Amino acid sequence: MTQPRLAKQTDHGRMYARSIGAAATVPSITTVIGRAAVDLGGWHGWLAAQAVVEDDRLAGSLGSPSRLRTVAREAAGAAERYRDQAALRGDRVHDYCEQVALRTMGLPHDVDRARETLVEHREEAYVVRFDEWWDLYSPEPLAAEVTVWNHSVGYAGTLDLVARIAGKVCLIDYKTKATDRNGRVKALDPNVVTQLVAGLKAEEQLVDAQSGEWEPWKYGDADLLLGVAVGPTEVVAQQAVPEVLEAHWHKFCALHRVWTHETRLAATPTQLRPVPPPPVRAETGGLD
Image 1 (cartoon, rainbow, N blue to C red):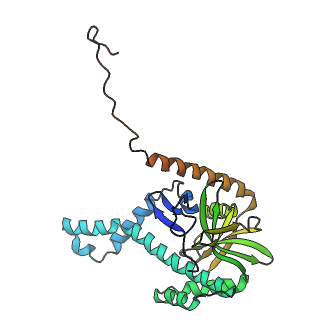
Image 2 (tube, one colour):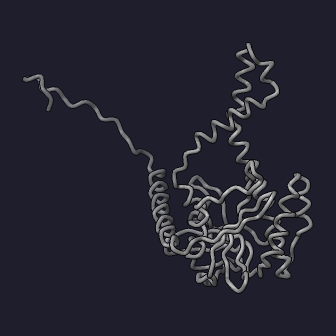
């Protein structure tokens, strides 16, 4: 990567510091958005059931409770394994996208290493599709993996790319996506709009992580917010509809308040205490 990261994982989610070695003081954009409730129970159950069906040991486990428990126990972690594998793949794809942008900007890069890493994991299709998209859209990168900060609300984050496309300044967030049964890249979640709006509303951008030098955010008047779904069969770019940006900003600020109150409550040692029964009045047998 191009510079040391200021983000670190804490008990309160991913947090950002102002410089390397400084205390982390504000949540990441994705940590704030993560306060929105998402019901994944059905998805977890489906992955677990699929893991059981595909387990080669299933047939030999029938009639053996202990063996069946082993199969079930490992299947229960299918969702976590899928999530972790997807996160690692996303990191590899994002790294390649960043290296391509740095190369285009004439900055030090390691495109070959990033490509080889994807090839080693049999993910070269992402390279091919992304290169096709890059050639088709011809983005002129202005900043890659730029870290931003908002003091007024209290958050920070890292934007994948700021680029000029067809004369328009665009804030871009890449999402590594799988494909559906028809071979089309899966749809982007609308939360990508919330994420991009929070980036748009930044107030500063990082200059040097080691010294903690920042400067005013240059792209708060960007023309377009683009979510780019990068898949093994195609890459699809979608624009955030301007009419919904204000609502997404209000949503983000509301989720930030939720994060703030949850963090304060988590630091409170006791939030519930036992209540004894009221004393009985001896003369009437009633309650006070």
